Length: 290
Image (cartoon, rainbow, N blue to C red):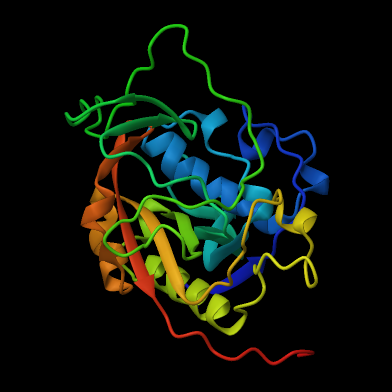
């Protein structure tokens, strides 16, 4: 593997068919390459490995997020070698070329956010469908199986997020605005090499040096740009970062400096147990016009 490089896609409108995988998107030509690559990684990790429905992977936050994708240069065979069947000698060597392939991704969700998940809550496609205190059953391959949804239940229509007071937790007072990192995924073959930490640190360094980028200020960005409705006071971001971590990935987030928020509790997203974690970073003064 060559030296990885990382691409950033800032918030952008996205025409995405939720039920279709990235390679089958009818509007692929108009979708930014970075986002297609992010969804390729997410589909491989969350949909294929963890059995999350394809239609639940893309959500209403994706167009307002910043997305990072990390690439690796790998050598791929274009034409396999041809051998003489009678002698076994190679009559035509294989042809290969170096290609950049996406191997990991993470996204940054600006505030405002829905209220913190309920302790024991069961969420499907971002909607609360029940309360459960028991761990979900495992799937055939050992991965968590999706928590069944009661017959007749439906998900609520997607609405624009509105800034409003939340319940307080260990590290969040329920009022201070925070940004949220999530959808952290690394292709299986490239895990254990620090790729996840590299992605998270890149995102953190970027937001630390662009603290006003997601500020909900009508004068600088406008409510429409942030997908927000007017809803009371809008304080500025001051370095607080949250993540909703799968329990199996807690150690990865801890290596990046996050601490578990015991007061937030434990809940289930697509049948997978999650916990809340927070990190506070020092915000650097932003130099305008650069």
